[in-house]
Length: 68
Image 1 (cartoon, one colour):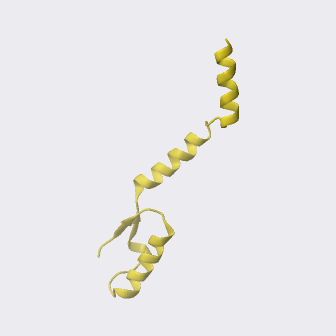
Image 2 (cartoon, rainbow, N blue to C red):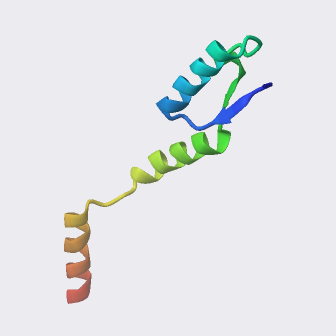
Image 3 (cartoon, one colour):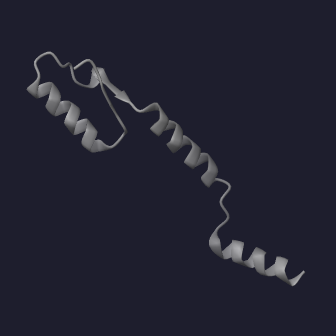
């Protein structure tokens, strides 16, 4: 196995550690590649979350807009 590509879930850490124990030629964490798209997705969600309006505030804003 040249490399293992997986997301950042902790169960994948366990899998890589087990593989390194079972396979003599597999060095473990050094041959784990974290999925770049998963990391980009997490970053994008974090950035977008900053612009979310709390539901209670959103309802108030919508009510005021409907009155006009």
